[in-house]
Amino acid sequence: MEVPREKAQGEKTVAQMWPSREETERLLEAARQGNTQAAEQLLGTHREPLRRLIAARLDPVLARRLDASDIVQDVLLEANQRLIAYLQKPDMPFHLWLRHLAQDRIIDVHRRHRLAQRRSVDREESLQAAAWADDPSATDWAAQLVDTERTPASEAIRRELFRRVTAALWQLPEADREILLLRHQEQLSNQEAALVLGLSEAAASMRYLRALRRLRAILVPHSPQKDSLDSSSEDNRS
Image (cartoon, rainbow, N blue to C red; front, top):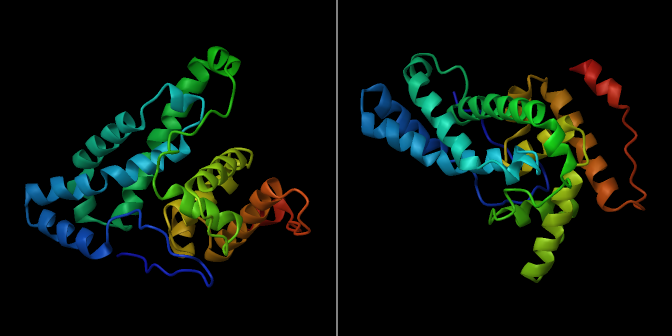
């Protein structure tokens, strides 16, 4: 039930985040046959992608207090407990099922920490370096977001670019930030992103284009490119 992955025209290839579909399917089939080692390997191969996903979505202030790896451990524990049920009825691709569990956990973590510690957290300076700043592939897709033709020559330039993109992402509405992370960090197709967000493919594509324009407007404020889309129109399509 894997959704085909298709690259948008002109989209550059960056390091793959999720394990290959073929390897995942092989391990899933072995797990269905009762192979516990295959089940452990299946979850293990998704540990690092989950860490990167979670680190990118933790509020920058909370990221200084929380370890994304601890949240990953909770997600994998839940996945292990629910794996048999998933194998019996896999209603979505495995990586999307895992990220759904992770997203629920992230929401819960933010709710608990932001509400319980709002006073102390809000006193701190916002926008510290994101927990995912050391992701080796991050600067690649950050450069892609800013200019699909740009290939910075030095690592220093690339990391500065990534810092700027990270800061800009956190200035966007959550819906815009999420669609950009789905399409660029996780390299999901528009079809997959639509499934994750519960949107039609047309609405997901519209949201992506709007978010990309808004991000570029923050990064290049004097750019002639304007986002002419009304924010409410796409929400109505949802």
